[in-house]
Image 1 (spheres, rainbow, N blue to C red):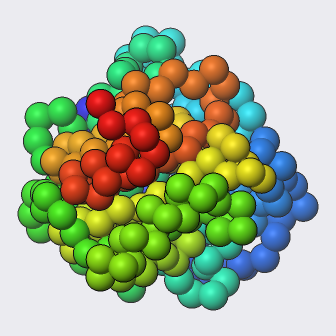
Image 2: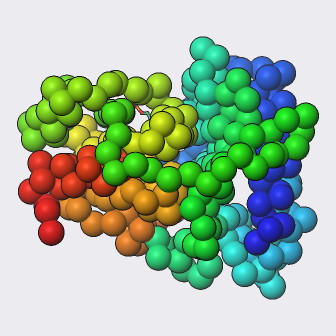
Length: 283
Ligand code: F6P
């Protein structure tokens, strides 16, 4: 497993270099969700694929930027599902973007996720790694090396509210829930990049990030294998909760297709309990 984390550190440095030096324009292709790919999406995907080709414990790769499963090493034990450059369209306005990695053993479903990691490319490069054995571990890069900063825990209740999705299409009870949090004094924090938005809530002690199902996208926008399940694991390991609109733990999701999405809510306990109440799914 350590080899996988070391590979993630290596690719993080390379992707950061590409973000800082390469063309920010569109490529002439689109990904399997029909979204136009930026040259940086394609490059980041290539960097990750090339790096994992040398890691024999990795059986297969599943990328947000590719349709199917890429088989690598038949003797390998793990499948790495990754979003090479999440929020990539923010790079051209110079906001933070990120990479997300979920490491699965066996069938690709939430309960088989055994570790996850994400990288934030911002003013600094930061990395969060979570395994079953510990709280998420926070690292920051300096001169190409990642230094451990601390373990990360969420407070019971936070102050930040990151409400995603097109507000015009929110259902009434979701709108009431979001408005009630602001009425309680919560502050808006939403950049449009899942990685920096969830990173901020984690490091500032708590709050909630939501991407609900809406009338235009009933199953939400964020992908289960590459985005939702890896972050659910990190939030639970930090002492928080991560659920869908039925109040089910996102770590219990079983995607039927690699690119399936899910409504998702990540936060500290107070906010997620309030969400379950608002959605009428309090168990
Ligand atoms: O999945 C891509 C992504 O850019 C996430 O990083 C982000 O949280 C979300 O989409 C933003 O979506 P929207 O623009 O609909 O708020």
